[in-house]
Image (cartoon, rainbow, N blue to C red; front, top):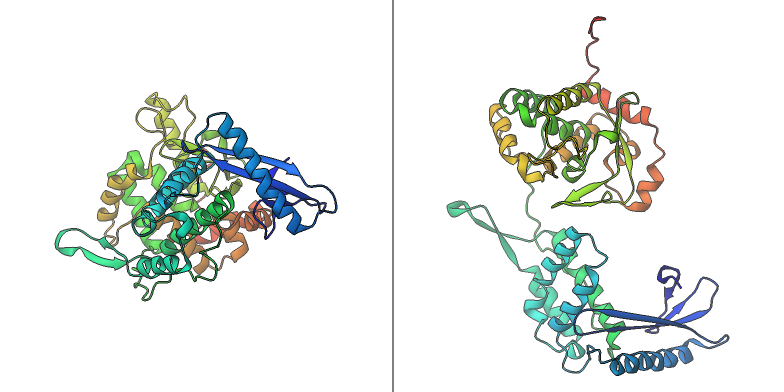
Length: 400
């Protein structure tokens, strides 16, 4: 019985199938972080309230079986929020991307200092509201030394903390049969004063100056900087790119994977997309491959377009020093990162008149549903948008 086919009801442990029938689901967590899940069909014509009573009995049965098997279970009695969070996170990381698991852990580090030592069965709406008020006044340091300044966290950051807290508490309500829902009717945290954002995009002239400087002063990293600037791809997607993804005849690049700290995974939206390959970038990539072949680079066997010196995945931080050299040589006055180049591509495409649907199809920065919706954008439309922005390369001599 597939979990994703069931929809939760207002009664803990009671789920409804697409055909209208009810199913009981008992989830029991062990002290070492394991989760045991069992399901059972409900007899026909059983009311929701009767099913709720059956759900309690069913979970007690599952717990009794596990206790008989000498498995130590997490109990509601004397269980602190920290205790439950440790088991909850250990279970979640089994299905999360490594980068998302790290984000969950970081969010918990902002939740547990205030709530961690309290017994989870005693957490009240007032406790959650107190945490919300506390989170809204938290600050972090930006800058170093004498230039260090305390800034409030961004709204997106507070929203991420709230999502993790809310998800964990709802799982606790379901798993531990808590007598009340402390999250109910508590408003999420909100930044009181939004900090002024620094301008972090380049002009088209600055992009071209950056690429010219990179070719002259850091030629070994020129190709990857050009790929970031001329496609708008995420850094993780750039460094997971393989030669088989590049189609010179169709003038396209298929973006179908990403990586984070050596862990390869699908794209952020889980859906591949196709971005146009500008002829200018195509020439740069061909020359880059010739260098790899001439040097018999260790990364040739892996098929990675931008392998590390030992042939493995590169990380975004590896290009920062080269980027800084190129930025200084180009006379650019802002700090440029791969994310700045992605944001710049997005901004310049908007300013050039590219419609939002085409841009979403190229950038892949929408929800999974919207990504699928816009996946039908013709490659010719995408190519026309990029050519309009960066121009058509000069025709080559017939002898070239």
